[in-house]
Structure formats: structure tokens, C-alpha cells
Image (cartoon, rainbow, N blue to C red; front, top):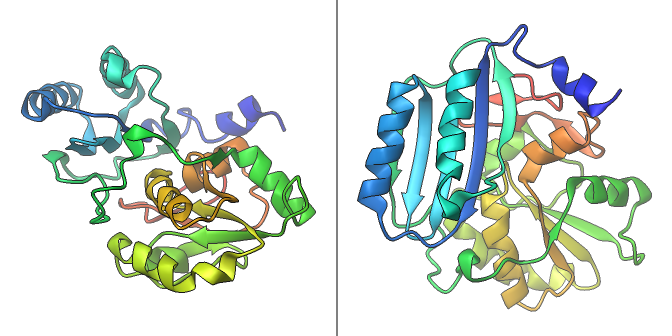
Length: 257
């Protein structure tokens, strides 16, 4: 099945609501003005969901009729800081959010490590299709064994995860650095790939892994949702659903709620 055909099975014909999830680490210094602009535009277009703004960037999950979502996203991309902002898409029969919220926060995703600054430079990333190949062949392209590291909270992992992934039953993401430091030696000799729902947590996690000297470590580009999309729902190694923070609760590998 081609990617176009696969995506059409979950498209707007039977599911009129377009859901988007995206983020970008980029320095922002006009947060109140930006918040007012993004909220006003989303409200006018009838969108629901959450947009988080911080000095380190933007993180969002929004939903609404397709024309409104695409208009909002196009307007955001007119800002040079968000040009070519990627968006992971899924469809639903109804709005999975009750309200529209645009918030200013200290961190997009709280880690309590001010020295971890993704906007200053990203850790290495592995594409979804490459990880799928590694999982199927049992090692990376150099022959190193792989360890998948789940950076999500325990209740999210319970909904679904990669088979055999490391799961520290985190209660909150800020627990990750201490857990990694305690288990650092377990990753020696392996290629480590951190992953999360949409990429934002595993991007920060990968920087911490690099700081601890895990040279053969990566983040999964775009997270689980991108993995489902780019593998056309095949998702080698995945078991269960992907937990999402809206009324759908979990998405299967075809991005159905």
C-alpha cells in the first residue's frame, strides 16, 4: 500500500476533524504578543487544543476543521522562526479537545536542567524508516545492538511501547536525568535510541545522553507519531497504542483513535 493510499484511509472523508501536533526549539523573546496573536487566530478559526510557548520555543496540539487548521498553520509558518514547521497529522470524527489554551511556560517540557538548550544545537536523530530497519535486522548499520529508551511517564507506556524498550516507570519527565545517570553503564556497547510521543521529550533526553558520554545515542525524529506515519502503519517492533493527551486517549499504528 502506498503512503498516499494509507493516509487516505484515515482522511477527511469519514473523519472531518484534522489534528496536528508539532514543536520547535527556537529562541522566543516576544511571548505575550505571540500568545495573543496565536490565540486570536485559532479562536477565529474555531480550533481547540493547547499551544505552549516558552523562551525555548513552541509546542502544540490543535484540532479543528481542515481548512481552519491549515490556515492557522500557514499563518504560523509566515514567521521566519517557524518556517517549514513540521506537523504530524491525524484525523478524528469529532474534536478531541474541549477548550483552546495558549500558555506561556518556563519550559516547554520541564526537565529542570537550564544547561540543556536544544535551540543551541540538536543531538543526533534517527529517521523513523531507519529505526524500523534497525529493529527488523536486530542491530544498527554498523552491527551494534540497539536499546530503545522510553522517555514517557509510566502510564503512557502502559498504553503501548516498543517491545523490549527500557522503561523506568517515570512519574514525570524531570525524573529522567537522575534515572539515566543511575543506569548509565547499562548502555555501554549499545546504540541507544530515545523516544516519546512527538519528539520533544526524546530531543531533550538525547542531549542529556550525549552529555553523559553516550556517543552512540540518538533521538527518534518526530517520535512515535512520526514512526507510525512514515512506516505507513506497519510500525515494526511496536506493541499496543500510543497514548495521547486528549479525548482519544490512544492512537493505533494507523493513527486511528
